[in-house]
Length: 401
Image 1: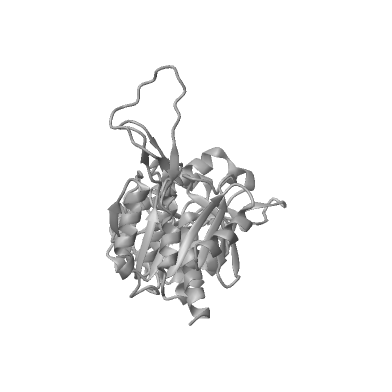
Image 2: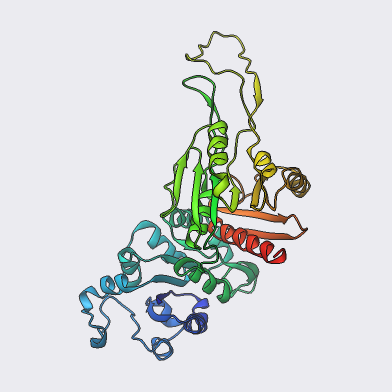
């Protein structure tokens, strides 16, 4: 696998040679691109010697005839020849350039030119990381499909403890292979994922729904598909594009979702119910718009079908995963739901907590299993959470093989 390693100007650049070595140990052919400021922390000579490839340090760096590159279009050819672009460390300045389409050096131009997956591992001062501008740029990159390996908590260069240090190199390398060359450990599985909200009509204009964006479910579907599963995504209304290679069935109401889940249940081996299905629906739906007459409007609500419980009763040999979005007593409510719905795994989160609520690009969860295991995940991109949920499915299978 050909990896382009972008290195930007911060103190964490000293870790780049070891990161390069770890990628090589996994069989990667690494080509290095350095910004001008990165050369203040580590030399191009060192990285050229380790990578055994020429290092690009500027838009007009000397071409290498062995690559057949013309200096005027190096960034295009290099971008099109790569399997993945990894930028580690990525400074706040680089994130801003990528998010806003600024191409004023070789690396930022390469980013705009590449069709390959992109992974960035930010490193910076803690206050910078939490600045609203930086977080906005991170969200923008995530929305465009860039994988962000969030920085770790720890001792920073300025002598304080905080979040901002470059993520552990092993974690970065693992994400690279999850993105570019995922292990096909779900080959032969048929995975059914539900995602998004449901909408329960009051009249032709109004409806009841919830705050779910569908992002967690869509990331799960994409992760399962990338790891070899045939994947079916049954989704309520969202603004998201379905992942490539995933079969999408669009539904609106809880009843429609129930119908599609039960229809396809017989051919599935794993069911992941990430959708936020409405707990209640209007008892009747008006065929005409209800007019305001100055009087209170009373809606009679009845329970929506409990799809998760129904699937649990028909589970047979399937793995069944549920979600519990709570605002209090998260683990207690999660354990109760795990047992009552005959689940194998339950993903619980406190949606009132910053970074874990609806419509965000990150999540903070605890994964509970039917055999008593608990795995706590701190705030991280939903793509990482999705892969960890799949990892826990495999671990459960192994323990009960």
